[in-house]
Image (cartoon, rainbow, N blue to C red):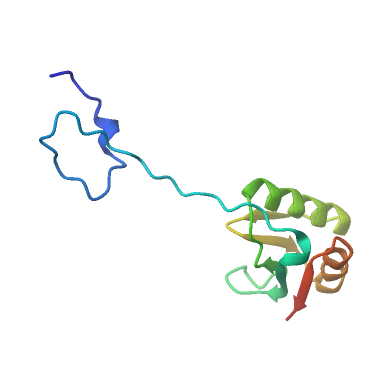
Amino acid sequence: MAKRKKDQFKNRKGIVYSTDDSYQYEEYGDAEEETLDPGDQQLIVSLDKRNRGGKAVTLVTGFVGLEEDLKDLGKTLKSKCGVGGSAKAGEIIVQGDFRDKVAGLLTDLGYRVKKR
């Protein structure tokens, strides 16, 4: 029997052992959702101060789509506001209280926006 690498088995969840020599494990990765059109997305713009050392950030949540598109939208918002931030895990963080400006920019881009 051919030697197998240890790393080959690390991501196999739910499979302990197979005696079938012809068995091929199929890895099912997380399928990324396609980016919805801006008009079909409901984004929530809110102010967040929790776990940030008292600093206020504008938080945009509710984005449905590819991580690349999220980062592009985040980059656009951050450059228009002239501040830093990040875009990951389905949310965009813009440093500072820019709720009105971010909501206006998103509306201009065609997104449906809800301010909190």
